[in-house]
Length: 114
Length: 114
Image 1: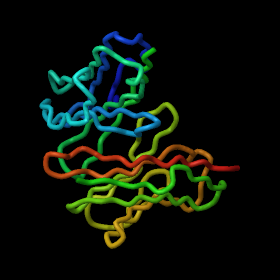
Image 2 (image 1 turned 60 degrees about the vertical axis):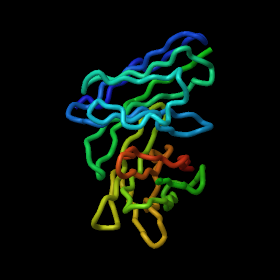
Image 3 (image 1 turned 135 degrees about the vertical axis):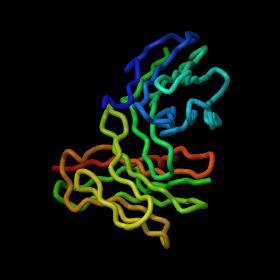
Image 4 (image 1 turned 180 degrees about the vertical axis):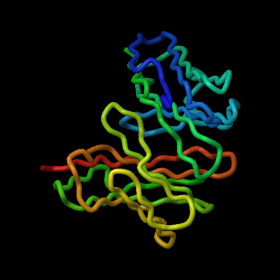
């Protein structure tokens, strides 16, 4: 199993530009999570999908952030326009339904907005 | 709502010494608890999890954790630290109902001294 695949691994962009982060979850998993990690705020859940449907997006910082999951094997997190304070490592994780199941994390995308 | 508190953002131990990383949780329902490890520039990897049954849970790399309901704790231990254990460790609790995402603690950076 290839695990959760995120792309790109690193992204440097200028303030105001649109940024799209991509995630391919593990086949057979029906839950998908986007987390953001910063030194100041630690790991924050941005949005959670179940069976491709957004269940909880209360962690999405503002309207500049949007996430989609058009099918079970692909999700995107878009920031438009990007700002320097969006600089962070963004993780995608997937898992099976069920309270006793863990989430499997991708390697993350390190985003730097200059 | 559920939450976890990790006591000590930084812990240093000598190689061969006992590792003890503390985690206390808050949950309105029986908790599902997890410990993850993050090596530099990597995603999070599951060490172990508690769901139901035996309160002493063994994980990978010689780590174990004990669920103590009376103390609302889930501390992580390893009898003898190895240099390769140096990493950041996260405790997490899984929510219930529609909030099935993992909520993470702020993390504990473990340093192993030669």
